[in-house]
Length: 157
Image (cartoon, rainbow, N blue to C red; front, side):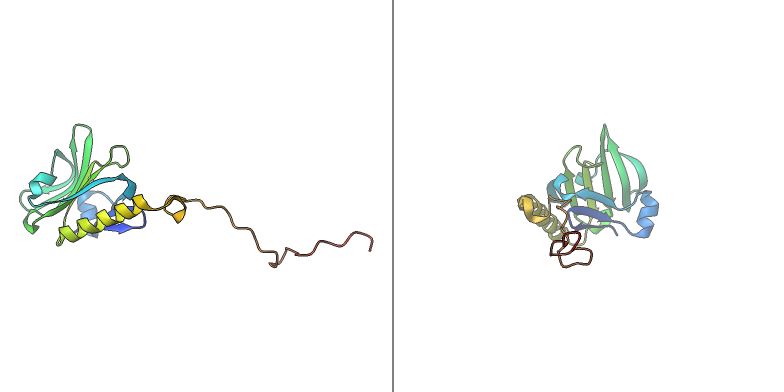
C-alpha cells in the first residue's frame, strides 16, 4: 500500500506499481514548504472530501486517486478497513493538491516524522543548503594542470 516518505526537501506519497496504474498517477511529490498541517484521522471518512475524479473507488475497500471539490483537488490512498489515516493539509498554490490522505500501519509515527521534517526544514538557516539550490561555483586551485602559480616569464628572455 502507499506510504508517506520524506526525501530531502520533499514529501512523497510512494505508490506501488499497481497503485500507479489504478490511480493513473505517479508518486505524488510535494515540497516540505507546502505542508501546512499534519494530523491523524481515526475515522477515514473525515479525510475524504469531494467527488471522485480519477482513480478507483470501491465502497468499503479502496479509495485511490484524485478527488475534486469546487476548485480544490485532493489525493487519497485509503484502505478503509486498515484503520487511521495520516492526513497532510497543504498550502494553496504551493502544490497541485490541497490535501493528501494515506492509510498507514503506524499513522502516528508517520505524522510525527513528517512534522519533524517540516519543522527542521522551516528552522534551517539560510546558508545550510536547504534554501540555496545553486551555490557559487568553485575556483580551480592553482596547482591543477593548465594553471601556473608563478607568473609567465617576460617575452624575449
